[in-house]
Amino acid sequence: MAKTIGILTGGGDCPGLNAVIRAVVRASDDQGWDCVAVLEGWRGLVEGRFEDLGPREVSGILPRGGTIIGTSRTNPFKMDGGVDKVLQNFDDRGFDALIAIGGEDTLGVASQLFSEHQLPVVGVPKTIDNDLSGTDYTFGFDTAVTIATEAIDRLHTTAESHNRVMVVEVMGRHAGWIAVMSGIAGGADVILIPEQPMTVEAACEELRRRHARGKNFSIVVVSEGYELTYASGESRVVGGEARATDQFGHVTLGGVGEILGHEIEQRTGFETRVTVLGHVQRGGSPTPRDRVLATRFGLKAAELAHAGQFGQMAALRGDDVIAVSLEEATAQLKTVTPEWYAVAKAFFG
Ligand code: F6P
Image 1 (cartoon, protein in one colour):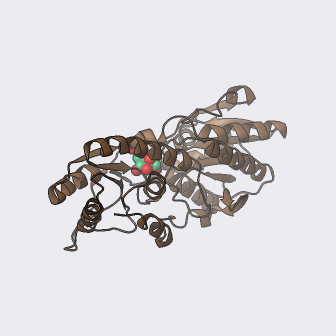
Image 2 (image 1 turned 135 degrees about the vertical axis):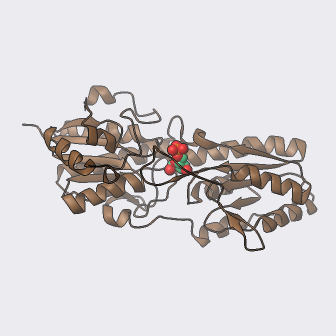
Image 3 (image 1 turned 30 degrees about the vertical axis):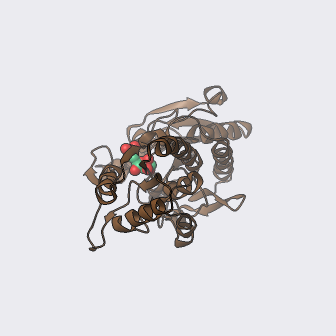
């Protein structure tokens, strides 16, 4: 009898998820394995909601954004009897392996299910935030940076025509990777991130310095997780509401751009406008780079599952796709290093 792999996608949707699903299904079909979608992340395994996934179902999905099998921020460890239901449904559906595609939360659950319950699971790292350790890059990140860079390029037009400061708020949660990379690529004049909290006063000083040099417009990129920090030592996160649909305890972020824009205008007198990119950064078709990375991760995950090498995650190191342990990959967040921030800072002001 053919062996069966379950596939689930968890956490925020991300460009490239469908490319992974397609690669796993195609590689498994070649090896005589069946694939089954677990619908809406861990929730599908708790509730026993499945759909068959064959080469026909994955045909044409490579360039599609989002995930054709749905996603959620369900955490079985936070539900009454959740883990027991996961294990029961896994057995009842006759799964031999599970491929979990997700970020720190989804893969954290996978890691715990493997170590505590020996669930035969393999991970694939996805997130636009690029904050997973164990891999040099996650897929989805390149698309988000491309979208943010294009937005910065477009905002330059209005900045220059109207002599304005344009503040762009980007996603990334507690990691400033999207801000740093799109800011460098888009030629931002100040970039504010959670890891290196520059003060509001220092940011304004950079803008004044730039204007004193004869440039009467500026671009400021701010990461949603940047804490508004003042020379007095005061600092605060903007947002912070808990969400019922998020069982991992994440709070909503967003809104720092608006406050920062107001502060800049008040303190410098430069007319300022704010743009919040939001979920546009996660939407639509993946870039070629993300399609290729997602495809390679999918092939690696399928290979690991077929070989019975569980508790592992596909990861990019240099130009190679390798396997790392889920435990190592989810142990800590990968945040922006001082070296990377120094590259960005070389162009401030
Ligand atoms: O982790 C991806 C991400 O887009 C973060 O950058 C952002 O903070 C969060 O998800 C937004 O989550 P939601 O889609 O639930 O609002």
